[in-house]
Image (tube, rainbow, N blue to C red; front, side, top):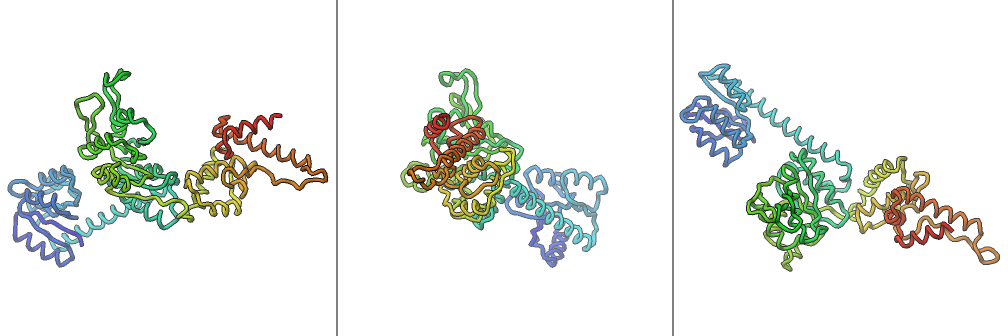
Length: 452
């Protein structure tokens, strides 16, 4: 049922309109004074407003101007027995949806209201479709499992607001990916997205990184420097690993959330910032509350809406579509098409993925390096350390040793795998070792052995 407020200084008109519109299914209220109507619109929610143009005190045009300035979003239809096109134009300029001349017929009022209702329904549908398109346009966020679909539905709804969100989940589940998706779905999408890992920056540097500093604040501060909160002004800041935030900075972050202002290190003045805060953690913050490691007041400020990403082992339906997305991305980097055999996909589904999506991504990247023809088989997606590139040991010959030809084939396969890994890593041996699933020392030994 749509709520409608009639604002007119004629009590007889208010009563007759209320009887008419109540019979048509509207929830109707009335006010004879525009100032009281503005106060009521701030305290209560209405979908439509019927407002007279000429009223004592605040007239209809000024009423419209003040209501829009206060952020009012209800559709307003103005009424007048005196005006003409000039008043209609003035009302439209101030945000009125439509204009009705008095005296009017009941059918005219009802038709205008029905048109307004239809516009509101269409606007709601467009907003919902835009959010849906934005959500599914983000191919990094895959949601085939019911748990992920429910979580993403909530994320899409909360994205439209500026409320603080706490994202929880095990390491590697994609908390930053979800935070970026929320930012892209929000009205702040054109603003900056700034991500900071609170556990990766030394404690003595974290405050100046977050809030900035002024010249002379400490040795080496030769000029004023804006912090990450100022960089995120008008956009979103992600405080990743929020559970690692030192106690002293927890107090200062609480002030930012409460007052919307920061103080640079060494400065006496505060600065206003408008940055939406998203926080993420793999820690059990409730346990940290019990031990006093994390402030309770900050926890409740951050935990306005909580989005929990389930571990990959609890949503096996997402493994195949995630693998497809990651495979396409790996193929773009490699400059060639990649595909998974049914056996490889079955092998991926059998694994428990302790490292979640990050481990799956590494497995796909490694398999792409180990597959010479771009067709990834089950042995290519074996867990790291399983040496999938090593051929099975051959049966010994009469002298008790493997055939020389087979040894040469194994060495050739190892050499090719190492060369592909080094090529994919751009010659970086540390990255190549990770792709091969071996230690850097083992890779050095292998390079020396293959060179002999």
